[in-house]
Length: 426
Image (cartoon, rainbow, N blue to C red; front, side, top):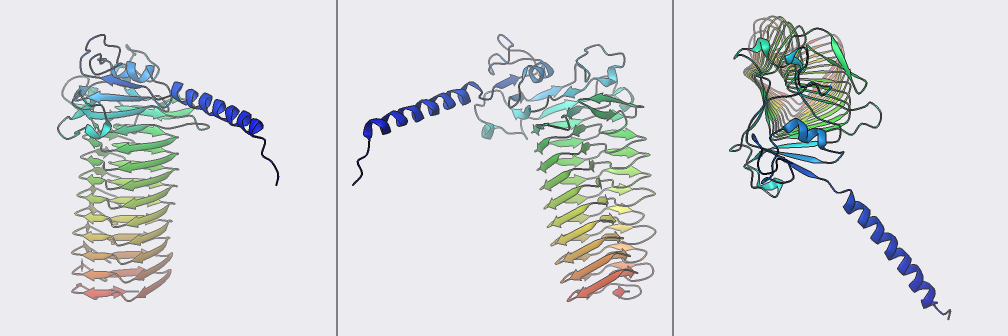
């Protein structure tokens, strides 16, 4: 039997432990720093603890390194610098909260917590506001929050537990930040470019845009996860995307409420998505309104979309009031569409044009349109299986589903009490 050289083994074991110790020490040295912010400074004001909380949110963001976290106590905060660090810019409306790449922001603290799980974001409302002037929109900040990561090597940000309100983007032109164009007529609430970003537990409301859009939240590129947010009461005047605009990225939206947003005239009052890959799960998309356009709930163009267990209700548009797809690849499973209204054309529930769509186990009821109150398809390739169409009403054409051209396969669907022109028309 071969003898084991215990001296040699002990030496290598010692070396291994030494290397492990050094590595662990390095990790400790690079551990995240938490900085603390309240509406007014406490103690030394250096942000090292709640007792020494800073009263300057932007200063704590600026002081943070990649991976650092800023905890923000309850209250209302307004921007103090522009995108380039100027506290007295030529136009005060260019003031914004600029989140450095790799920094994580959390709101909803009372000011005593030692763990994120101790937050109560409902009671400890933490507001980032663009209301820097008089009590009207016209002198508000163009953007309340901006994050712009480099296209190569960008990390992204976390924004969690805030009310973000009162941005008004109606400006001309754009500025370059980290190689990205930030336009002054889009993204009044939150404007994000590149990186891997997480937006959770936020209330993005009462933001307005003019001549642009993507008003509440604008996200360009990157990999983005939006969870548990409420995006409500945002408006795009003479533009599209009142609530959320998604462009050229990969996006997952889970358990969000997208409600009472508007676009006039335009598209996508709730969500506007273009040239991106999207997964929508268990969201409520309700009460959004488009004038002279389509896609009051969600409007997608040249996207790949998966929609599972979402609710579309009480959305209003000229056509495609609930879900509007133009040139997309869609999978819709287990969604519910009810009380959506398309004033002139069709598809109060779904409007599928030039798209390849698989529609399975959805329920569409009490929707109203000129044609195809439940589903309207034009061109493309639609496979419609095991869906329920109940009490949908069309002024002409079919109440349940209306298909015009394309390749359409309808299998094992239930049509019940749909009115005007029958349940299905092909």
